[in-house]
Length: 429
Image 1 (cartoon, helix red, strand yellow):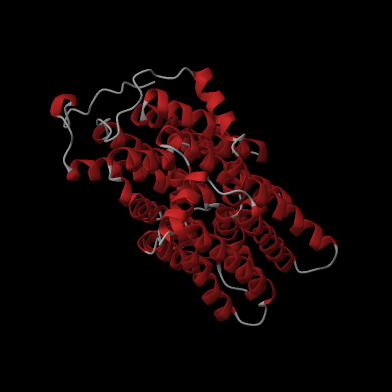
Image 2 (image 1 turned 90 degrees about the vertical axis):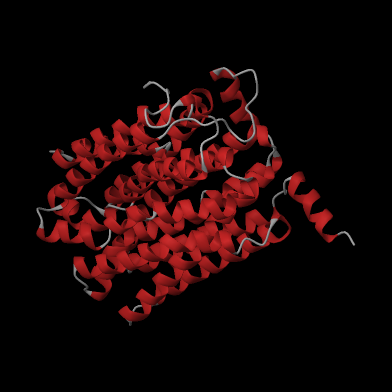
């Protein structure tokens, strides 16, 4: 792995860095997360080009989109351990070149299997991007600002979504097709890697790490032990569903739905995606600002996820008005900010010694959920077409049902004793 020595501009013996230096390092890490956001939402804008060039069915398109989430999610296990054992800088610098290589391979892919290979490399390369940011915040910023700063980080990372709106749609339609988009992403990813190499080092955490470093075997065993904790299952169940629902819409079905159901152009669909992305810049920060605290946070999360399921159900049957559908989609983007509360819930549900692996396991669940939902909705769309039904109605109903069931499971499955204890403390006279 690349050396973890400090950046020349930030010497290792300089002590605790200033708040400004911490923000510079966080923003450098967020550049990688922004590229990760761009990669995971390209499919909606390149879907027609891929279908035309490779003759893809909706199921194959869903499998392509889902492969990013699958490779990203599976790699979380190794990346989470790597972040703990080797540090944020070394892990990110080692993994991210795979995203550069994968995007270059995608831009030149002669066949569908080569395209899938590129998607696989991209997913693995991007896998430590956001987890590195959340761990950096958890280790180097005050605990009471975690929800807010995580929301800000998610918002800044949403800049990557802006590229996969109107700019990518214009590139695809007027600038050389979908391959040009992947080529530009390869260049931007290389620049992000260079920025992280120049600006990020490992400050001393506010909470010192254990004196004895875990081995790989101990760390992997620790991940397995998380699954034996009863309250982990409710967290992971909704974790596999909430973000997956939003990303299945934004990253896969948005442009096809708007173009096929309402006959919008690709650039018009890109404009909607851009508007949704702009909202996504601020929604997580707003969600963090509105965080009601441990005592009421889980109830807010459950209600927000159920409301999102209801909006998907409305979108399923909203055939007559493109404007109404666009407004509804933008509202869904605003509501998606509740996801940052789930990260805060994870952090509050485990002791500090388990925070890193718990966040890693949660992020892994999120992207395995993305992969599974995008793959599943591709199958649903293909099945609906064979039955002579509207594919987008079937897809949106499938997402709504999935999210509603996950929300119910989150409510009824066990709650962390740490959260329960805090609830009792808050309600005690």
